[in-house]
Each structure stands twice: as C-alpha cells, then as structure tokens.
Image 1 (cartoon, rainbow, N blue to C red):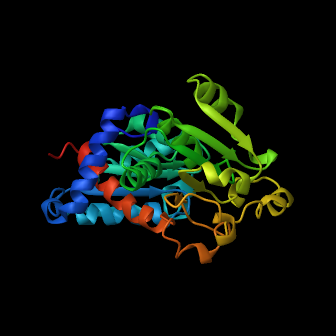
Image 2 (cartoon, rainbow, N blue to C red):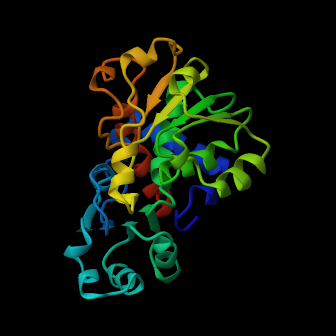
Length: 304
C-alpha cells in the first residue's frame, strides 16, 4: 500500500495490523520515539481543520520526525491558481510523506497519481475521510474488543457526512453488523451507499427519524453535526441544524455499555452534560486518532 485515499483500499488484515501497531504504541511509546527521525511529513490543508491536522503533526513529532506545510489554501500557491498536481510534485521534493485535505472530491486521488511520495487523504469534500475511520475503528476495537455482532447507530447528517460513509464501508466487512440510520428525510444516506454497500452485501439496516426509539438496541451511537459548509442554502441549514441533540435524558433507555462516538467538532448536537457520562468516548476517540496515524505513517514509510 503506497497511498491511503479510500478506507476500502485497505484489507481487513491491514486494518488489524494497524490497530495492533497503534495498541503497541499506546502501551510502549518510548519504543517508537525515534522511528521517523530524519523524515518529514507535509500537511497540505486546503480546507480548515483542527483535530486532523494537529493529530498528524503530533503523530509525526512523537515518531521523532519533522513537519512542514500550510493550514489553508490562501497560504499556498493555490491562491495564485497552481494546480493540485503541480503542488504535489513540488512538495514531494521536500517531504517524505504528505497528508492532504481538499474541499473537492477526488483531489487526493489526482494527487496520488502524480506524487513520488505516499499521499494520505485527510478528507476530500463530502467523499472520504479514511484516517477518521481508522480512528473510529481503533476506538470501537478498544471499547468493544472487536467489530463483529454490533448494532451501530449513525445519527445526524448522513447525506454529506464523509465520516459516516467511510465507517459504513469499513464496518460492512465484519460479521453480523447491523446499522440504524437516524436522520431527517433531507439528510438520509445517499442511495448509492444503500445499493452498493448495504443491499449488495445483504446487511441489516433500518432508517428512522426517531433517535430515542432506536436507542435501546444500540452498541455504538455515532453522532454527527449538520455541516453548514456542505449546504448551498442557509435556510435549509438553519431548519435542519438542530434536528438531533443528545442529552442525558435521551440516554435513559440506552445500554450501560453503549459507546458514544463523534468525529468532532460538535456544535450543539451533544449536550455538554453528556461529557461526564462514562459512555461518552469522543475525547478518547481524539486521542486514538494520533496513535492510529502514527501507525499509518510507519506503514506507508515502510518503517519496521
């Protein structure tokens, strides 16, 4: 595997190996402190990010490497009209590996065809976010001990949520997984995802607009925000942005071993009163993101 553009490019075995490495990093951080000494990661973020960009940077620093790059398109030659291909060819002359976020779907794929160094897709529009999915998988694995026989509720913006699309694809390869898709009609998952993944693989799923009714059966609740930046019409965003707000009261009938995940940032879809609930795992999820990205960097750089 030279690049990571789409989580479905990775085999189940490769994902298991990354999770195993991440768990070893968590247990033995000193063993990895100089693994990437002399290596450079370029972070090319054409779209705003806090967690993903800083997570990549922290991951490389903790491996003993260095980081260069930019955090917005206006800080790069893209503002002058430079193409993605030219940017990648240029930065590849300075760095050993590139993490790239771009608002246009498919931009990291284009970059990977021109790059002489590994490309990691750090999010491309509403399409893919494979390292967030790896973060989610590491979190689920550590909290649940595996992936089989889980009922996963995905709530909120299932139409534009790239993290949702990637997670459904990744989890579809495990045994006896069921999905509960919770959203208003306007934000249901895209039809192609239903046909090409859920129905093609004969997976059990239900669509509902009722979060509280779905709650008792869930092992994982994956909350998402309604993303203002994906809407063309502000009126539609304002009408839908508060569709689901998770409160302690709504967790009344949830399982005691439920785990609540969220790719963050949250706006108000999870009340801060939920943060102290032992089932809330979203800040641990953030921490796990650094470790799985460390494991991924090691794999793509072929560091033993």
